[in-house]
Image (cartoon, rainbow, N blue to C red; front, side):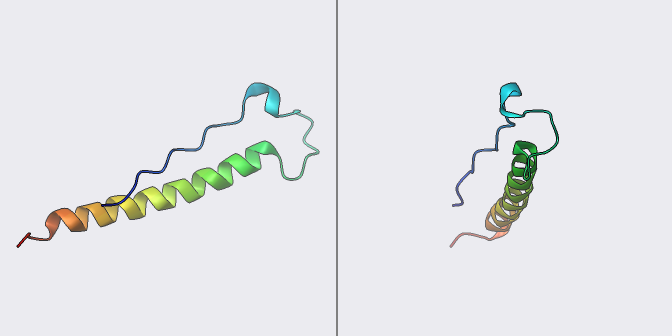
Length: 57
């Protein structure tokens, strides 16, 4: 069975300075982590679907 990864949480309102000068911004980090999470979730769901389709002996 595959494990469920927690979904990344967006930065708190006071985590971002709003100046646009930070590189990377906390939002850049969040969106990168969210993209990785979505890919991992898709792979997990695909593996789970394959596991459910496999007849048990």
